[in-house]
Image (cartoon, rainbow, N blue to C red; front, side):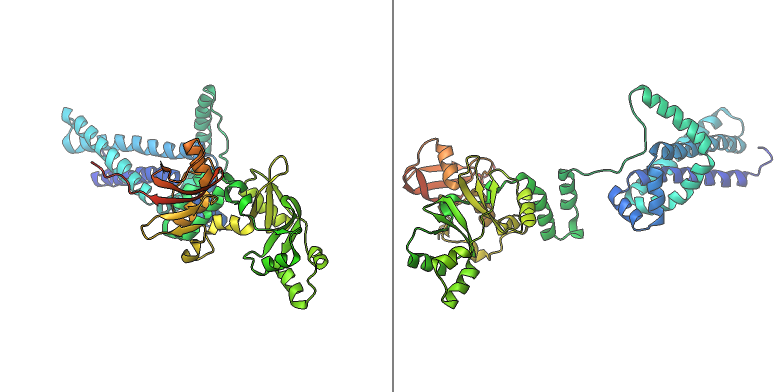
Length: 425
């Protein structure tokens, strides 16, 4: 060592610092890589990403070669630093202390903290180029790494940890939702809302979006024929259930466009009308919206009647209702306030009792509870635990609800206003 020029020793020390910093940065960069972006780049043909993905299949060997290189370099650096300090300061007692201080500072700052911080901030810039060096190093040092990894894996097995090739990571629904919401400008906000809504379909049932039985507009075959013709001519819906006497005696479903064609051709009779009916499509109560959507597509249907376990019809759901849960209302903001929701000058709303809570929340951007009853009437009755009377007032989840009109045992009309949050003291 005495024959080696001091400038050479300093040059070697600088090289070792850079080499140790490389191992530290490579370790953090590869570990902090976005796994899904890595997988995408690897499948797209990015060579660096493919090498990193290959290395990550056996993280024990990857960590083994990094630690082997890092510890070997640091050990050599410590020895050469001690020799260099003694060459400069002589064989004094303080020389060892100076060498230890230099080693500690250099290892902590230059070969550990700084490169690891840089790698955490820019993992892709460091990880992919590093793979071109780490892959050959792993092949060259494979016998040593294999022995070290085998000893470490054996120790892990003693405590019940199995070491095997790393499987591809899978996302849960909630984790994927978080990724979508954190995408920022990469995914437009409207697209984020639709993706999240698709994920939420599994949590919603057809009962949550159905048109309740009391609001179903249908054709009663036992009614006067002129009345049926007038009803068809003023209907707002393209498809309507046809029944005899009441909804439990469903005869079929009729498409208004086919009926209008009969009216225009003058061939509109009870026989031709019934010939245009199609078989009704039924969905059991509690069916998830995602399942209902798939069934609609498989059976080429756009409307279904919801039945309970006894076969009683509870309501009606259309393909449009399900799609609105994904993309939002198809109607304009002005059209959203239909006859069943009437805005008032004082900021309150007059709402029909059979309006569903989900519909209210969606149209008015409210937050009424939807985990229990489905309609406003059901919410009021459950809250009061009694049959409501006109003039009754209650506060539900920050909303003042005043019962305006009742009919029989149900609320026909209520006034709702959103109350401002209490002022902080």
